[in-house]
Amino acid sequence: MKSRDAGETAWVLDPILEIPHVRAAVLLTRDGLVSGYTDALSQATAERTAAITSTVQGACRTAAAAFADHDDAEIRQIVVESDHGYILVAPTSHGTCVAAYGGPEVRLDLLAHRVHSQVARLGEKTMTAAPRGGQGGTPV
Image (cartoon, rainbow, N blue to C red; front, side, top):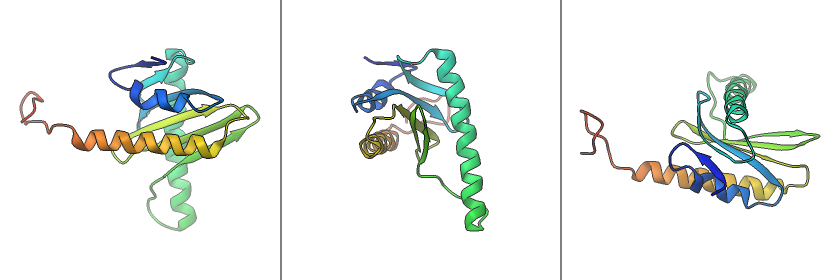
């Protein structure tokens, strides 16, 4: 396993690492808490990355809404290009987010496709999870 997970997140992150030149990935909640991260990151770096990613998402939602002259906007993806490489962030519809980092040589189209495929799989798994009961969080 290539991911340090807090649960069962390796199945989300490991396929992203199969893309050549992808160096790291993080699964996080919308409010910036780490759910899982790859071995290339320390826990402190994963937590810092998640907090920053959460802030960037909020700023991008606000900017997108402002440019469109609307009260709110949902972000589908955020791409940051730097001299060190690319960061691709893809939120899910259920409050989590996948962020991946690839070097300058990474094929951004392949990275985006894989990240969005994993986001879709994550959504499918969430939708098929057993419903929770009202007491004690046990399945009904």
